[in-house]
Image (cartoon, rainbow, N blue to C red; front, side, top):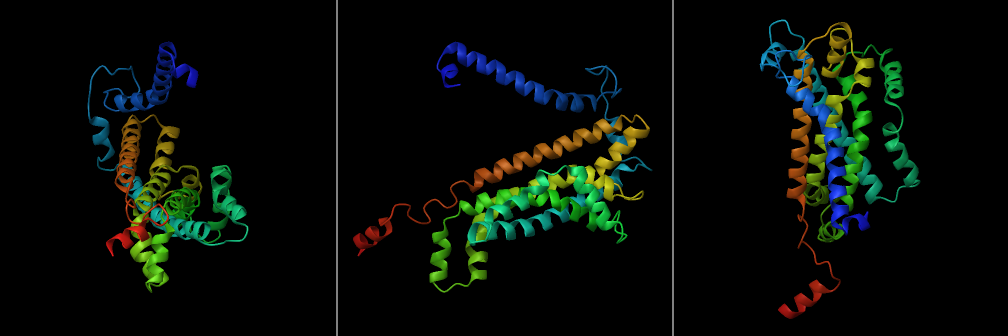
Length: 287
């Protein structure tokens, strides 16, 4: 790779290959967005004429899309709260404490990302069905938390590892208790990571299908499940409008994560000297 970048031909080849890969990844997304504005959403590309009719149809009287959208938003919000609580707790234990079998615990936390989602969905179905909780937003949120919390843990662990522990030690040496240190030092510095974890948890829940399919009921269906039901029994062009909205939500989430990351960069710079003895020598000169 280094040899390719060192020559003009190599740079051209890398540019062409990178462009082809990006086009291959972005082309399906572009097709969905463009066809959602076409008069015949499942017709020719590019569309012969343009319309907003499919978006208007989403919120027409008798449409099931608003209920599915509101349920998905509610479940994703609950999942975000659950994931942040579990994620911050687990990340703090894994980073700040001398936890026995730390690697094994970390692997157990990340296990839901490796196990097939349909297996997790079946297990959750067998758990909530005897309790008559199928279709409950709480059950859906708890199920989605199984997948969202590992992502939150990874983000928050990286955030906590980037926080200088000397700041917490300095606060503790001044008499601050653990809750005060967490409230005044750790949480403010970890806020960018917490916001990023919240965004990714929300998107994970909002787009989740398998768990929602197993835990939904006839009267309560999330947006991905409603899309599947519509395409299974009919060909509804409004699905392309819903898909475009989901893409827009994902894009906005990524922009927010990038903005939060940029704002969080350098937040700790200058809080404590990085060179041993720097602060002492500075104090000596001042005296």
